[in-house]
View 1 (cartoon, protein in one colour):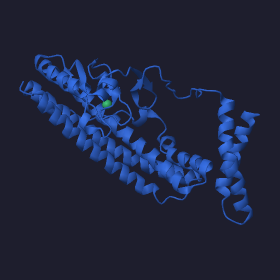
View 2 (cartoon, protein in one colour):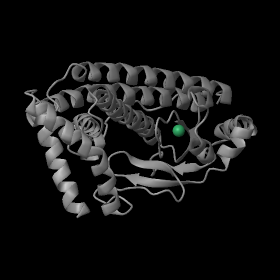
View 3 (cartoon, rainbow, N blue to C red):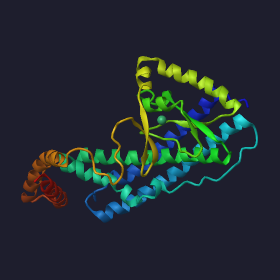
View 4 (tube, rainbow, N blue to C red):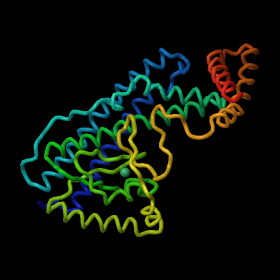
Length: 314
Ligand SMILES: [Zn+2]
């Protein structure tokens, strides 16, 4: 009954900071597996690494989920006093049941494709690391959101809202978050997230929450008062259903590619463009191979990809 908007922001900030730390640790542990990896073209070696990576991510998800849950317990205790039910975190399957070996093989896909386009091992390694970092980040983000959500559900919260963190975003508050900040969600729906989302949630609807709402609205008005903020506030968003992450925020009208859906644009045009980048690398790999260098795996990948694209472009 005593929780103020300021205290809520403090709790939320503490949770967001701990969650970021957890994600950074998991990303570091996962990348330690891949950093000196040399089996990019071996399906078995990639699969083995993918399974280990999934295990690291799973540990991180558990920590992140519990952080979300603990944060929400504090918020509820602040709003209601005693009587907040304690439950055990029960996360849904990672990536909503997708094949985790396949999901965590994506850093190798990124490596192979980038190498095929650039012949630059450093660029390929960087692409693999970026892919891995994003995978782990999203897994933990979803788990934290789910932890908060499960605690609200257990406490019979019926409505909740998004708490944005302009101070946590290096590039200023995300326009999608700010645009969605005044939305109230029913507990039947999960909070839609987005790339690198720092948002947390808080119950909405009872008298105490009303006080918070007024204060938060002022805070968001301040954040949205700058020129940048006003522009951000005009971002129109839509909620897309992501096959592995659940609901995600997207810019309204922007294409959202669902799993199994063909990519947008002319396939022949796309194939020609990619071929233009792949063919010089193919020629170079053939030269290196003829000179006795062992580039067989990279060359086989290149030949396979070029053959497929030539068939499309013809
Ligand atoms: Zn957000």
